[in-house]
Image 1 (cartoon, rainbow, N blue to C red):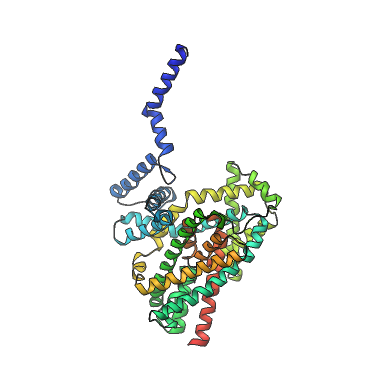
Image 2 (image 1 turned 60 degrees about the vertical axis):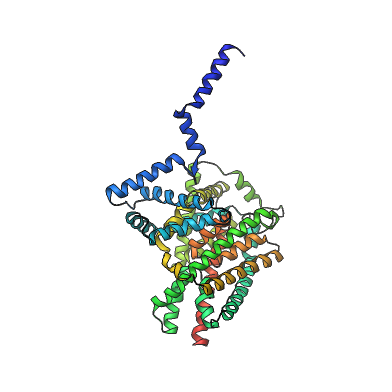
Length: 452
C-alpha cells in the first residue's frame, strides 16, 4: 500500500465518522418508525403539535392530514409490533385502530387533531380509494386459474363456517342462560352482518320496524357486538399468521390455492413488466378509480354494493385481457404502495373518526365475550378444515373466514393487516359485503314472517 492509498483510506474513514452529512444519512436510512425515517418522524410530531398548540387548530386539508395520520398511525402500529408475544399476533393493527379510539374517549388526543382527522376522513372517503387500489391491485396480480377457481371455491368454507358458527354461538348462549332468540339476533347475527354501514345499521332499521324498538336503541345493542366481533377476528387473523410461519406448508402467503405450474402466460409476463415508471403508477391508480366508478353505477342501477361491483368489474378486466401487462404491473405497484404506506394511517383515521370506544367497552361482559369468541373461533376453524379438504391453503381461507366477522371494509383492512395477507382483499370483500348482505336479508325475512 502506497502513501497515497493510505491517505485516501484515512480520509474515507474520517468521512464515515462525521455526523454531517454521513451520520445524518445513516439516521435517515437505518432508523425508522414504520416507514418514516426517525428524524422525519420527530420533525413531523413537532410540526403537528406546534400547529395545534400555537395556532389552536389543525387544518383538515390533505397535505396536513397526510403528515398527521402517518405520524400517529405508524406510531401506534410500531407500538403494537413491539409488544411481547402479541406483537406477532396482529397487535399492530389492533393498536393502530383502537388506541386512537381510546385516546379520543379519554380526552388525551387534542381536540383539533380529532376534529381535523374526522372531517378529513368523512369528507374525502379516503377508505374507498384505499380499498379500490388494494382490490384492483391484488386481482391484477392473480393468475386467471386461481382467480376463477378461488372465487368459486371460497363460498363453500364461508357457508360451512357460518352454519357452524351460528349453531355454536347460539348453543353457547343458551348454556350461559340466554334465550336462543336473543343470542342469535343480538349477538351472533351482528357478528356476521358485514360491518356497520352494511350490517349494523340495516339490522337496527329492521329491528325497529319488526320488533317495535327505537332504532337508536337497536343500534346501541348491535354496534358494540359488531366491533367486538371484529376485534376477535383481528386476533384470530394474527394467530393464523403466526401459525403460517410455524407451518409454512399450510399457507400460500396470500394465495388461496396451490399453483400447478400452468399459470397463464399473460400473468407471467405481467410480473416482468413491473417498473418504477411514474406514468405506469398513475395508470394503475386511474384504472382502480375508474373501476370503482363502475361499481358506483352498479349500485345505482341494481343496488349492488359499490366495492363488490368494482370487484366484479376488475375480474372481468383481468379475465378478458382488457389492459396490457404493463398497466397490470402498474396496478401491482399501486397495491404495494397502499399496502406498505397507507394502511396504518388509514387505521388511525378509522379509530378516531368512526370507532366509538365506549361502545366497545359496553360489550365487554363475560357472557358476550364467551359467545362472540366461540362464534368467531368456530367460524374460522370450520373454514380452515373445509378449505383443506377442498385443496385450498387452509390458513389463507381461514383468514377470509375471519373477515366474515369483520367490521366491514375497515375490518377487512385491519384483519388482513394482522394476517399480513392484504392480497386476499377481493375475497374478503366477498365475505364481508355479499355474505353480510345475505345474512341480514335472510334473517330479517325469517324474523318478520315467521318469528313475530
